[in-house]
Image 1 (cartoon, one colour):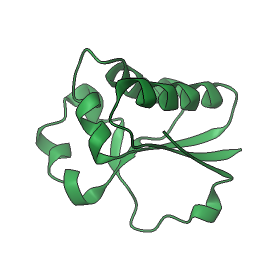
Image 2 (cartoon, one colour):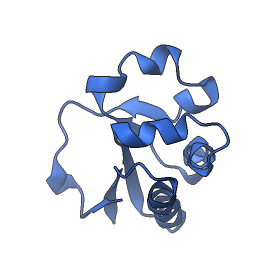
Image 3 (cartoon, helix red, strand yellow):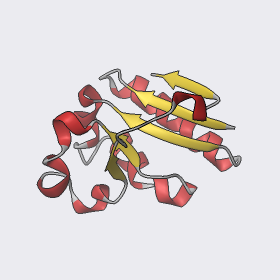
Length: 107
């Protein structure tokens, strides 16, 4: 199954639950793409937050880099994101076909 999980709620609990679901589904062979919206970005910038650590581990779950909106964060990727996190984040592609995903979940 191919899923797009959007983390949009700026609370650690909601974002944690969405990311935990993504990692769990990836463990069982599902293709999961994370999208981190602007309000949630502040949570992953906190090195002691659970979400920060979870995003760092995307590669261990064979997940692609999480998408960030390009309107706000294009400059942040190069300078403000810690290097251990930067490899796990990328700007959202210019064209995203929602029909490519079987499920769209928003937290």
